[in-house]
Length: 119
Image (tube, rainbow, N blue to C red; front, top):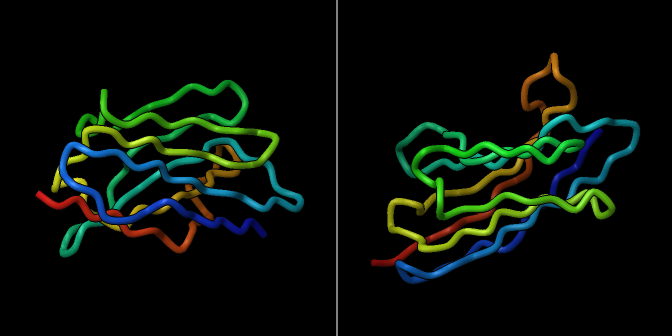
């Protein structure tokens, strides 16, 4: 079983920055991709960014390209999301998730961390 613990959320003014962290405790699991998703009030959960655990390749939602950066520390089993130039529309609960293998989806999810951007 994989446990994911997010941290780093909070309240920030528009134009500010936050850095989210997600630590994964792995027991017998592999990690193919780790990703960040978000869910704003009244909206569906949406993809934000993902990183491959071995190669480090990344992909981003168009809405965050150029502002957010996903990175990882394999030794710490931790993925980060650096969020710059935050906008009020980035306000959401942010979740990290693990995709264990190429044939699975994102099967493991953290509890979420609130990010609120004031205008």
